[in-house]
Amino acid sequence: MTSMKKNNLDIAYWENRYTIEQIGWNIGYPSTPIKAYIDQLEDKTLKILIPGAGNSYEAEYLWENGFKNVYVLDFAKQPLDNLKHRVENFPEVQLLHSDFFELNDSFDLILEQTFFCALSPIHRKDYVKKMCQLLKPNGRLVGLLFDFKLTESGPPYGGSLSEYTSLFKEFFKIKTLENSINSIKERQGKELFFIFESL
Image (cartoon, rainbow, N blue to C red; front, side):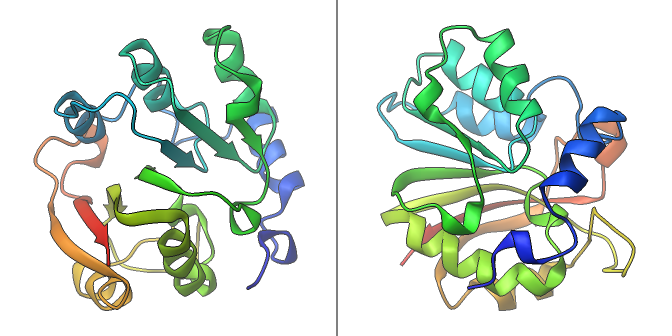
């Protein structure tokens, strides 16, 4: 499997994006569709991963609502420090400063929020396989995927419903993959909400 460290979007690239505050994905609060999904979860013991989490307002929201088994992973250190500053009692061992593709663990639920679109499209098949490895049987990968034409300029990189269906169906049961009806204003009509269940 190709490590993220071997492509041009390395640690220095992402650290610099935070340093110069070129972080257009940072909306300052939990993404509305993901918040709505979290709000209907009843099992507070779920082991949850948020990869490529950035400032991770979703993790903060989960923590404040009693989900204490939440792990946050990012290639860059600064966003993890930002979360720790906001949520001082968030356990250090649950802040994972590492390469997603080198993570070895298992989770009940993984939340996808602007991580997939930040990866070079050459890593998409690796992403799907790694997600499958990280999820427990019947575990869920839930979140948002951008719905706009895939171009060479990025991140973010786009994609389409047909591409995502083809990409994920070999490893996941596609329970939901549809236009997001409650995206934030800036992303309305540009996001697909999905729930994929590991086979």
